[in-house]
Length: 191
Image (tube, rainbow, N blue to C red; front, side):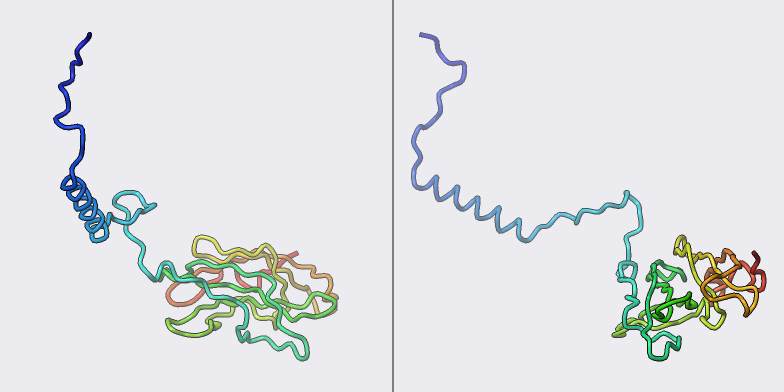
């Protein structure tokens, strides 16, 4: 017979006091775990600044906004929209490309910047980047890196049919010193 290298266990049966001790220890661990919590997981790298509550605010919804565009009996149509922090305050703004819902032709667009004040029920228009009175259509629209970019299509004269714009220009707007500055002058529309 070969003897075990490990010494025999001191006991082979449990007593009721051992069960009570085990149950008490488990109850203590459970109670302690409900009080002590680890730090929440973060996707940021060590040393990265934590995001503030305002940085996680939702972008304004362009639906239901009172746009400064007159459409008569037709409704206002939001063709495109994009969001981003344009003024560097940590809260996203929404830029909406809007036109009247006309049945034919190429109705002009308006481009509006929307924001929602803290506690406000609905967003509001805070800037007009393209006024529909200028008879411009907007394509290739985007909000990136704190700037709004778009391609503007216009007309060389009032004789050009509204279906067929004959001028094209790229435009970019950025927030500087409390206003949106356009990087290309509106008079520089070219073919």
